Length: 377
Image (cartoon, rainbow, N blue to C red; front, side, top):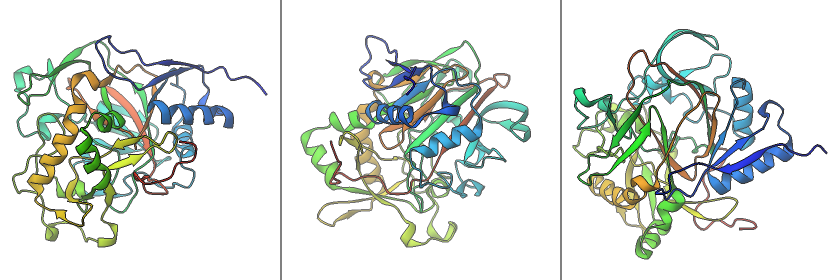
């Protein structure tokens, strides 16, 4: 057997950072990945949750798809299914599908004459001014930015949340940095590279809760809205990107596509790591609708539901817990979609072209709940 040449090191973070996750991997050929090397990558992913595989510029969309599916071989379709076809979805403007590999999406900013069978496409980087209730003033836009939307990659209706997402940096604009503002009366700010993807650990999000809150999240479940990305489309986000402001503007059932009650997702608040057994507080705050308590009571006041979840999650997105990845062309990032939240960040000029590929697969099984038995954990 040929010895693996892969090299591993923790992600570089400032000394003041409390980020305790993430691994950089070099010297790996993903087009010809052995079962042994994949097993090592999988083990590392579930222990450190964000992997940055360097120098992967030659990776094809097919190989990206095959690697992503390897984490869940029974998975078949893209994580959002065909919901992106709904013109009213808040996700619709942000992604283009690779024609010959429909599980892989193209995202970014600027005009792309030709790429992987797509012609003359205009990519639009998600900008917080289209989603936040109180955006940063126009004159400050290129110097300051926000977390666009903290989220899990998941349809949250009908389809199980993907286990792993892969992000491939094809073209990255160089240079500028921005100051990320929370604008939530805390004064919190974070220096970030242009167009970063920000990550926080949902395991840390659970670990720093009080004992009473840990008990609450272990025994409660979240009910997500039907067709959540259409349902939320008239609403606006908090300035920290962590959930929506309640103004009663969400679409009513009559204005949504047909709803099959059996496809509405009710998921545990905490998801268990399949390797370590650790618990993650894993909630998509923008898509929540109700909280189911252990005694059978259901909290259905949307404003109250949002306030409860925000109070649980907000401490863990404080600047010291955030990893803002500084993208380089050829970076392939794999992340544990059952164990981190992430957010798009940044405001680009029209001439700053950014081209990425994203792939995730709707999982073959639901996430592991807090009572699941994990072998060897």
